[in-house]
Length: 311
Image (cartoon, rainbow, N blue to C red; front, side, top):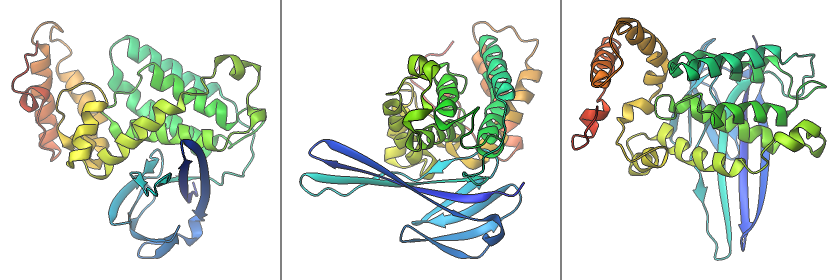
């Protein structure tokens, strides 16, 4: 599938507490994107380091970013330019997709099936099984579903994503880049919504202010994915779900690439183990070994938090 490379520059200005948000969308057509080339986005150079049918590695504003074409939506950390009473927060979001202006017929039945299966896995305590389903849903929205049509519009897509986040179908600390992609995509859809997108159902069921929670997560995820070992990122880990320390390797692309297969392998290995007291230690031990076979050295929660009692 041919996909354009998208960069959305988002700026939020505040003047004495009154905010104004602006999103500027730029893209490079698939045919014009080549490894080794340098492109100018919003006044900064973007250099394509490598490019294949699955992902692109590029540098932008001194950061090296790996972007999976199918499901990743990655943003840079925010920065602030204070000026007494005026401040401007600016950031960029990167992702691949078909042309946003293409309008096609689309049915939401498959997306609904994916969400139903996520719910089943969550109820069974098998959250790791949701990883490929969430990736597929993101791909569905970016590359299959039109940006807007008689069936789907940006607000409906945001509603689907909010359902996944609010019901905890994805674990922030286990798949931070996947969670970040959902948050970034939700925010993009809200930036390009129209008043006419809110039909009777959405008027009644859609939380118009959920973006405030999303914005907080986006800020922390951006730091975690761009610089996992920085002081800001380590503090962000805590703010994303408890005070337990997390091994920064969980924020790397290498981790995200293998975590589903690792969880699948460990689940099969421990399928006959009683899930009672002490099971977490068997689980962490098997997971550590499975990760090591894939070249990842991982410290379990007990190793990262030696003063904490686990059962």
